[in-house]
Length: 590
Ligand code: ADP
Image (cartoon, rainbow, N blue to C red):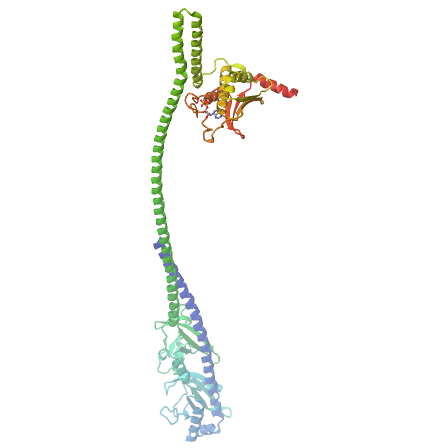
């Protein structure tokens, strides 16, 4: 991924640098061309002013009185030569001279030096023939005497209407060339034929920029325009083959700007070297490459760093998670061990509580059963003794006692049968109010013994339920017994029994103002063999039995502490369908 990113980045930076190069090159080239254009107009103006400065000189010479005289005489004197020299020097032209009718130089400004034109014949020159023919002439040529190129301007000298001679001035543009050279510029001037007639670089002089037709070449040869020079084409390369736009000369690239010089048909070419432009553009591109490279790879470095940091964080996080997992696994193992221990302990507890319950139950049963059994044993012995003594009536009484004892034993076992969930063999309608009255009567002795007052507030009508009368009596008896026992030692003990019939249930409430029930045991009261009483006083079966009886009849039993002290047990049993019907009927009647 990083390699791909690096490659992409390199390509992007490369592309950006290339674009920068292109853009910078274009801008710099345009700038250079603007400078070239300014230089060209300057040189064009200089060229024009140089020509304009000397253009009038042939006329000045024509108008001078000595000129005609000299031509008529056919010879010159020093003073006329001196005059030409003075004018030439003043005007800063290359040469000023007068030709006779046949083209031979009669007088010249350079009469006194070795390049003197005096005596030379120039009738082959176009400026001569044009002047003779039409009065004026102008011509560029390489000097046959001096070998230096120059521009010749001529004017015919007349006697009457007949031309008798020609006055000529030559300009050499030496100052212009010097300026170009000094400025290190590459400037060319081409004539109408495309021949380079002036060049800041001498190598290019008299080279041609295009094909010259053979007849034109012959003409030039005749006028000895470029005497001594072979006109060879300039070796250059360009896209369109013309000397314009981008051209390469001698392995160097230039951008060519060209202007026409009106009047003399010349063209000025300014060659802007593209090498410095190319170098500067390369510099910009290199700078872009460097800066973008630094930025790009800086970013890459920063990204890598961030990734490394993120990876480190992830690794630290993973390590933490691993540690937490190990810790969790340890805790789970600990918990499992604790659970196992707890289960073992619970099993042990269940075992021991079972044993304890069994122990309690055995003690209670043994206590309850032992008494009638030993009484039966005693009664049987005394019964047998009485029979031996033929005291039949007494023996009958004793046997009747024995029967009572066995009935009691039977009652105990039948109590225990309740827990075996054997259904009542023959359910019968039972009036709970009757049940209550019977049990109150039966326990009246205990009530008296406990010095407890009994308050009865019973539903006015029979409170009919379905089940075993004996069991319901047992239920009421148990609750009454507990209430009496709870009131033991309490001043102004009071036990109240209230019954009501709500639409479908017989509700029996047995309340006392006894000791009440401790909150921590209130949920265990109905457990079999739960008792707070000592052996002989209670076996913890009373409430469990009562619960089972109520449950068997489709009802329920619950207990609560009274706000003023003491406890209240509430039994709800389903009313018999007749009673429910009666109640509904009463409601409708009422
Ligand atoms: P037992 O009477 O043989 O102890 P029970 O099942 O009848 O067994 O009663 C269980 C326990 O409930 C009693 O030991 C006693 O602590 C508590 N209890 C029952 N009735 C009352 C009551 N009316 N007031 C206070 N505590 C009671």
